[in-house]
Amino acid sequence: MHGYTYFEATCPDGCSLRLRCITDKIQKIVQAFSRPLLPMLNITVYLGTKCPKPGECPNGEKRTAYKPRYIIPHPNFAPCHYYANDIAVIELDKDANLDETSPICMPEEDDLLQSGTVTAIGYGYDERDRPDKLEPGLQEINLTVTHHRHMIGRIRTSGRDGAVCPGDSGGPLIPAGASSKTTLFGVASTSYAKCSVFGPIGDESLLGAYYIDVRYHLDWICNITGVCPLRTTTHPSPVLDGKVLSMQPGA
Image (tube, rainbow, N blue to C red; front, side, top):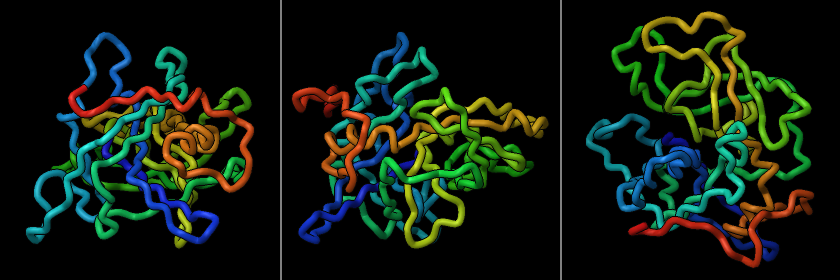
């Protein structure tokens, strides 16, 4: 997935702390089954809000290519348990070009995402009859949050007019209608929508997806990046003694 998030935080003394960090879908990076890890040297990151199509940009524009300095998967990622903790932090090799991307706020643990409309953003394929359905570029769709008591650390969504499809993994989930203050509540993880490039999806009850709830991982993100919540959280970070599992160039 090519959906990324650029973190920015304000320090107590008023300074601005900009971190070269993005979240991505861990199962695209850490192959948890029998396949070897993708070498970091083979990974290139593009921030897509300025030039949202693959290949060359229109009008001869150039977009910045980034390489990962570190890739840090969540230590408790569990692919056999509904992809629990399906989140990673990536530090880029240089600061993000703000002309090519859009900053986003981190939530507080007690921020509420009520059952209602949210916006999902991603690069997944589009089933509609169009020549570029496999690579339609950056798109967004409004979904509905459906809460379930057993879904700790995840957000479930459903939609009537479309779905999260292959290629959308890792994309952000934000409140619908967000303007000057966009907050990252979720990162796309898994979908049970019947997406097909050969025809309409059909039954709208199948247009559902699961997002990793960022609010549940604030302490871990704080420990890794230094981007910390303003208020105390109740979910301690799984990182012990400052030790983290990370992938480095050449790994």
